[in-house]
Image (tube, rainbow, N blue to C red):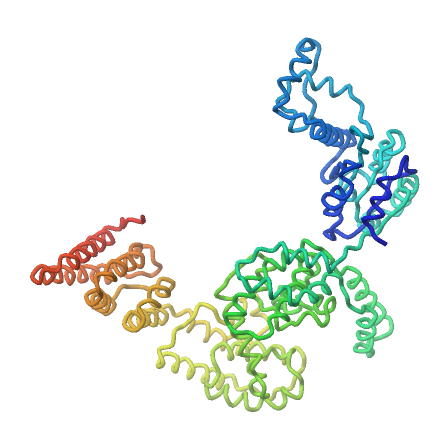
Length: 629
């Protein structure tokens, strides 16, 4: 059935017996069809007036809204606007003494017409035609009005039965039937039978919908649109829900055949109910497609090869999230939050393609690019794990096959005791100790004193290697402390205490500051401003001075401006040692003053000018009121 043709046929029908109801899920494109597609198709013969019932609380409000829409259409059709109001004013000039006030339904285009005109409008009855065009009244969002559905239908019937309007009612009838009580449901069905002559169930052309969404997209990344076009069939399948639900149910029954009959029946019914709620919301798909561009850009930068499975997983997760079907469990750190997505979109959703940083962004709006990059990098490394030891070091225990656990854990324990794991891998090992206990997986006896010795060995190597400590790393939430034994939690705290040791971070960042200035000045400009410092040390000043001194005139100015940006708010830095920093700045100023003397002796006026400017910048920094132009 061509729904547009059905709507056009109804609109062209003279004196219809009743209203036509267009029913469909929220966000499936009903309003777009009514507001855009249908009016454009019948523009020569009909005028479509859409009235949203959302938020309207009385029948009077509905009538006022209908009148406002009708007169707005009349003004447009007859060319009445602000330009024509002087002529209209002359017509009603003699009636000013007896005319009333403007009514609430007065359209915007008429607001500047003399107040007396409102009473004339009030006397004009609504007609089902404007000029030679039929007026089609569309009442949208039936289920979202605070008026009872039965009363609404009665009010709408007045326009259809007594004023002979062609009426289209747009609704989500499933929502109506689920929210009204049995007695009210009978009343609704009874009145609906009198008012509505036919119900059309709206199912959009999903392929065309997806194609248009991609076509209208204006991405920042030039390659993203082509990527979407190449994966259009995946997006269409997710939106349409092209999934064999009976196969899902049979597979579920087979996997859970050991359950008692009553329990299996109950769980099967629960699954069936979930599958019936699979969303087809076009707005949710649009949001997902638009938002995924940020993830896609990072995936490409990290050189992921299977971006399409990340796309389908992200879209599926967002569709389920916006439908309110995500399982939340703070107790288990949202470990099971993806279960419903897996059930609703098998073959499209991969648990490993929904890292926690992306989850938090979708569900809470918390975009943390550093965290997401870190987690995606970790996932990329996990995907390369092939041997049992590599897998058990990289995955949560519930994600690993039993045979792999048996083969990989003995070697894992050896590496744990020897300090051969990264700190993130140690945290994962602690988490998996909990899961082993929860799922009764026999891992053998774990000597936690040896585990802690291994952690300390790894810490010593980190310090000796002078590796940079990042902002993002694997953590266990404090609220999940009760899930772990005292020894497990003590081991985790050992790691966290080391990571919270800001002195180590500051020392590393000071070292990086010096090394980058000496080896890659452009990278230094880009990265050093994002790091934390507790002091500007003498060594940092010495290197900065040498860089400035040895730079050509073209680069002296850019270096001094960069230095100002780095240090002009040093007093606001957390943990900053003001005494050391100010002593270093004073020394820097003295070095530059001596450099000025050299430039004067050697007749280098341009270099001298840049150096004097740098001295003034340092003076401003010390005063604490550096300019921010």
